[in-house]
Image 1 (tube, rainbow, N blue to C red):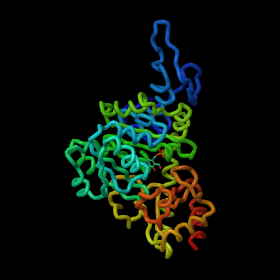
Image 2: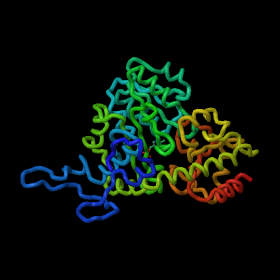
Image 3: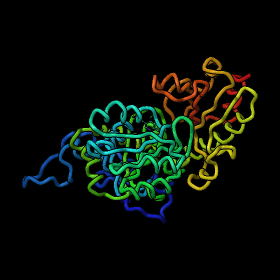
Length: 380
Ligand SMILES: Cc1ncc(COP(=O)(O)O)c(C=O)c1O
């Protein structure tokens, strides 16, 4: 099955089959990773299988990229060794002197790239509340070339209206890129809503088992800008290992079922937390009290598997609850089969704007009753 966008084929089917096929040489049904860094030339000097050297292209990576493009219904995808390498590739495909509009509430590492690495390189940026369209409009400048969206955002689970932001960006001759790590293509398809690029930390739900690092960019059009993004992989050398590509594609086969089950459990946990006396706020787009709930219903298939909540009191109260959980693991990251809980502000560093009474939860695949029992005893 190739990566051509095909509305008729369902996501579950694409997750299993896109980029995969029976191995012609051996008849193997399950693909094996192609670890070779180099590929043989024919006597006439040509490369019969199309691969020369694994930084430029590799069969396991090419299979993964076809799969990723199909899942996001894009024209092409490029895989990276981390989500951070993927976002850097997009930013460095711009020119020094260009301007980026980015969300105030975004993954702190993306903010660090813009502030510490790219400012020095001459890329300007402004941070706005991306859920406020007037603020986005006001932030656009004549040299704005990219509007970066992260929805739901990390860690406050704010939503941005992808279609409306993309329209504003295009009205200003800028591209719109969406970090779709939290929602995954199971819950949200930004390219169908008008975005030009989708970025993933595939470390999270796509990998799904907390055992690999990866990133990806998927493009609506395989155009000159995307060629620059791909250069970051093939020429700058940000190429993922073939084994990781293979492992990632193996996990993607179960992505739709994992994400849907995790999101259903997250919805139940958010409802449980809401209204508890020690809980001051629950941030979860699937709750009808969430300020962007109507947008969530329009733009997402459910509220997702991430949530955060604030304790009455401050940092000490939040840390005390995190200290008492037994089934949740106190750890950073998200999207794996095991549930994680994290005090975000203490991991984000001095630039953090995250409230210090906030805990972020990545809901895994354990039984919902066991997760709720754990939170209940920690909050009692
Ligand atoms: C929303 C989001 N984007 C990007 C990243 C960066 O990805 P990676 O850790 O794979 O570099 C993360 C990591 O936590 C993330 O949560």
